[in-house]
Every structure is written in C-alpha cells, then in structure tokens.
Image (cartoon, rainbow, N blue to C red; front, top):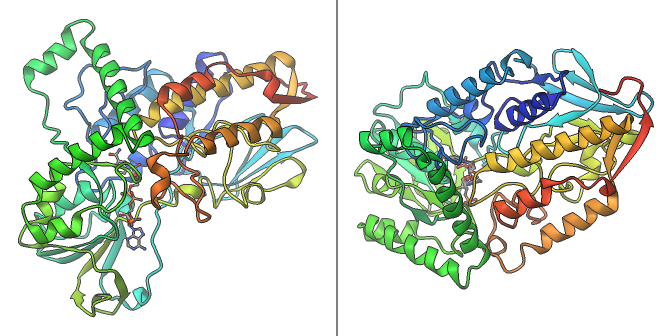
Length: 483
Ligand code: NAP
C-alpha cells in the first residue's frame, strides 16, 4: 500500500511493479496525480531544477520546452509516466488516509481513510513527502481582517487580483515565482519579507529551435545534459557544505547578480540577505528582484505587528489597507505525514517516537514500525540536487527490503534501533561546519534539529542506499500469505 501519488509514490509503485510485486495500491487524497504539482498551481509555478534531472532516470524526455519546466508540463509528464508504466489503474483518488495501524498478530497494516473505508496491507509506503501541508502562521488580529485570503498552494483562481491591494506574506521559492506574475495585475502589491534571500539567475526562456532539435535528435546530447546538470547541482551542495571556501564563490556570484538587478538602493538594502550563502534555499529567479522595483510594488521588511479589519499593521505603526492576503509561508515540512496517525508495534505511535524530532534510517525506516517505509522522509531533502533522484534511490532500497522479506517468507521487516541510531548520528554529524547550521530555516524542527535535509551529496545518498544490508534489519513472524 502506497500513500501519495506524487513523484515519490509513483517511483515506489513503478519500482515494485517492475520487480514482480503485483498487488500494489496507491491511495491519493487529490482527484489527480502529481502530489505537490497537483496542489501548487499558482501563477508562474514551475520547477527551478532543470527537467533533465528533475525527472525519472528510466523515463527521460528529449522534448522539454525549456530548461526548467512549468507545472503543466511536469504534470503531463507524470500522467504519461503513470500511464506508460501501468500505474494509473492502481491509484484510488479522493482517499485521505487518516490512520495506519500495525497489527502485531496478523503482521498487517490497517489503513483507514477519513470517509470510513479501510484496507489491509503487508507493507506500507508513506509517500506524502515534506511539502504537502500548507503552513499559515497565526498572526494577531487576523480573524478581524475583512478581506480575502488564500495560501499559495491552494490558489484561488476565482479571485481576480486585477487592480486590488494585495499583500504577499513570505518570500520563499514559491513567492518569488508568483510575485512577478501578480505584480502585473495588482493595483498595489505589498511583499512582506521576514528574511532576505540569496538569488541566482534563472531566465528560463523556451529552448531555441536549434537547441531543442540538438537535444532531440543528436545521440548522447540529452544524457550529457543530465550528467552536466547533476554535477552542477552537486557543486551547489559543495558550496553549502564548505561556506568558508567554495561557498564564497557562490556568495560572490549571487552578490554580483543581486547588485546588478537591484538598482534601487532602498529595495537593495531591504532585500539583502544577512546570513551565510546557502543556509536557506538559494532562490533562482531573474524576474523577482526587478518586480520588487515596480512602481506598484513595495517590499516591506518591517515586522508585521498585527492585522486589523482593513489590513496589516507593521511594527513602525503603518497600516497598509488590503483587499487580499496571499500566504507564501510554505509548508509544515518537519511534520511529514502528520496529522495522519501512524501506530506501529506494541501500539506505539509515530508521534511519540518522534517526540524529540523526526528520524529514520536513511530517511526510509523507523525502528518499531515493521514493514513501514517512507519516501522523502526525514533528512532526505536536498538544497542542491533533484529530489526525484533521491526518491528513485529510496524506491530501489524499499524494493530490496521487500524482496528480502519475501525470500525469507517472514511476516515483517524492521530496522534495528542500533542501525538507525548510528545512521542518524552520522547524518547529524554531517551538518557540522556547513552553511545549513548558520541560520534558522524550514529545514529545522521546532527544537532546532535539522530534520528535512540530507547533509551530503546526491552521490553519497545513492551509494548509501544502493545495497540494503540485511544485517541492519530484523525479520519476524512467518507469513502464510507472503508475496
Ligand atoms: P518557504 O521557502 O518555507 O518560504 C516561506 C516564507 O514565508 C519565508 O520567506 C518565510 O520567512 C516566510 N514566513 C514564514 N512564516 C512567517 C511569518 N510568521 N511571518 C512572516 N513571514 C513568514 O516556502 P515556499 O516558498 O512555499 O517553498 C517551500 C519549498 O518548496 C522550497 O524551499 C522548495 O523546496 C519547494 N519549492 C520548490 C520550487 C521549485 O521550483 N523547485 C518552487 C516552490 C517551492 P523566513 O525566511 O524568515 O522564515
């Protein structure tokens, strides 16, 4: 049983089907495939990781329209892949899983949905990822605000922004994509920034016909591009890992670009980041900083004090009257699959297990949760590379675990606590000296532990997961129904 039909869920389903696991079901909350790409349809929504890398290695395309694909193209790709690999027929749409419970007697998971249905499964793969629950901060007085509001991941396309007084709260990767789009429509646009960001260029024009033809028809060009982008992405990770040395090259590159784009001294002063390059996600946009300098746009760096019925009041006492507030405030990333209830061996809940921070062996397996696997789980996010690459490695690792279970005719497979503790210690130690430790970010949980990111390179992660070590797991129970 797989929960979630985004990149992760599809990767897992395809991997299992290709290796002879025939009884696979995917439960998906949305009415369509795509996960985060289904829900995020804000204006300008696109991936800032080049598509030759942000796609499955086994389903490469030669006809992407541009370096970084818009949402519609990514969704189309996922639909094609699901169809080509026979996964679309396995997905049950409109099913919101609310709980998953392990039965110590029958060696099965019972998965229940909000509408009262339930399923039984020998193994569970939770592929809800890190970026599926919109986060809206509690700001004093918001209940008094009489205007409209919505989150960037639940865009209200019925609300016409033309000529309106609009506030965008938050300036992360989503906001920098939609701000330039809505700046053209809004009467007045106030962008409320809590922390400035480091930027690198991304113009993302459609490929010229010749380049497109070259990628499409010349053998090896597409594969070379994927390889090139892979190492380029690893270079960004190298900068983040080595802030005092190579990181300075990234900082300088970004500073020159930002200085060139930010002609307005006042906007420049406000937008300039005051933390180590790479600590938060480096943003790729050639359109956001110019948009901040439009006459109808104001970058507000003064802290928000509260809302009133008419708008938002900043700490300096200025009230900006608004028709609409758009929350670009990101996701509850370190909550992972919660509020879904996950109960493992002996009735222990995952919430209790993670009371002092989410942790999983290589982001995939949690001790005490037999035959449960996570896709894009704790410490598997990347600031430099492609999450799709990580998910393929996870899918193959999970498949190896299930093959080991099957060949032993056992009832369950669980990671040994000592193995998980050792890999978790190694992951946390991997952050020492890196840029990630030098500021606060959504990579950290409320206790400050970095729970979202992998501290190393894509190559290291794939190598660590390449061959599953059965010695790190325990197998229990004989299962008459083992597949
Ligand atoms: P985000 O990066 O978490 O940004 C949230 C923004 O909201 C930040 O600027 C944050 O400020 C601000 N914020 C949060 N709470 C606030 C509060 N109480 N008051 C004022 N400001 C507040 O969210 P996102 O932009 O949706 O992106 C999330 C992740 O999704 C990205 O990092 C990326 O991994 C992924 N994403 C990827 C793409 C892509 O093209 N590949 C595009 C969009 C999103 P602080 O910085 O001060 O916390």
